[in-house]
Length: 614
Image (cartoon, rainbow, N blue to C red; front, side, top):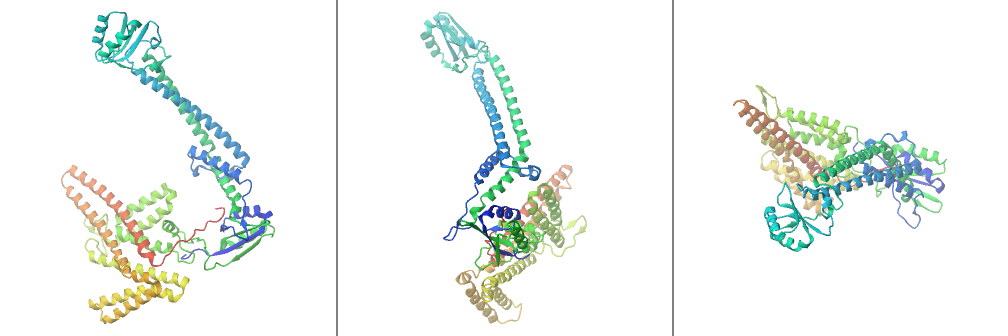
């Protein structure tokens, strides 16, 4: 529980005729963590199987379709329900790609049509109210026409009448300044001069060439075409969705199948290879070794050489955490930080014990604890992917209720009606005692970390180094404690005993950690004082709750509207306070572990155990 699972180094040697069988069996076993081979003078890197590129290409196409159809892994059924083969997969992929491309081309065609129609309608709307057939705006030998806006159409008509000549002036019913003027060709220059005086602004209607009928009739026709095209686009999209729905299980299971095949086909790239043989090196959990050897020998009919050995000090051993089921959710914190080294104590179980306690100490309220417990139990069912995280928060909520009972608080109140909640410690009144408890928790937590660090260092560097590097810090604290006891008259101890202990501690720390240890001497006390945040967060939470309660209570006796306002203050205020309390308690509990606790014993940097085939 406090250390990763025992690993054994395994070496598999065989002739190349058994390579594919060996890879298949290793993939089925899912227990061998393979160490990638680096080319050297004795052995080259193996070559992938010929089918690797075929599988890779198919996998790329599959993933492209999965992305296009926006499919999720949970949409797949068990792969065993459908027998898959590369030929069938490629055929079906090509068929789906062809159908999808055809549907997309149709959609694009309808979208282009809608865009063209929208451009035409925008131009036609400029002619709104002019009841002139669009075919009238075509090329004439004896007539010229002008379409646009003028300052005053009635004055324009008067000017044209004075000039004389045959003309037809049409104005818009909707906008009198919009005109369409037809004039005999001989009067073109004079007409342009008159239009210039009327501040004429032309409209380009060349895009309307070929249209017939009035602008309003054309707008009506184009709108109907757009409606029809939009319906067709929706139908085509539904057809794509139907194709996605029909093929989702096939695509997702095919992806899973191809990933495995690609992994196996490219596996030789991770092996050492000679002309006639291959060598696989890796790690197997001790509990799985016997079964793995038996199955490899069976598949190769005893023609594989399988050797195993204990890890050596300089080996990079993969880490497989082994924790009881209740502790496993707390591995989430190790994933956030880093995995322990193989020979280190795994702090997951320690966080299982201490994280909820620190969290509960800070939030510590029966009402808040019950609320968060119900909330996280519901969220765990609604979001199963985050089950591990919500399990952590369930433990933290139970701890919050426990400390709420110790503090005698229910949503910040120590009395409910006339019933005074029993308590051991009042956070609102025993502030200094709360501070002393927080610092005491820091001393215990940090020294616990130093003891674990001693165990880790003893395993790696021997007893003397571990004793000096870790127990030296304990002696330093003891020396400072003796001095404090002497000068504050807590105990009848001579001052020199404290000075001797401090001098001895400094010598031990320098011997164990070198000059770095000497530089960091004050750090141990700042780490301990950092735990005062437990009191600060706890106090801020209860004080804000008290302010909310008192503010709401003042409004409860001033009529129905004031009572409603008071209820709103209670609900909104406690929601905000609970949110702040959750965030603060979570982050500061995590910080005390990562910064103050872990630095006393934890190095981390372990490589995760990832067995081939998993």
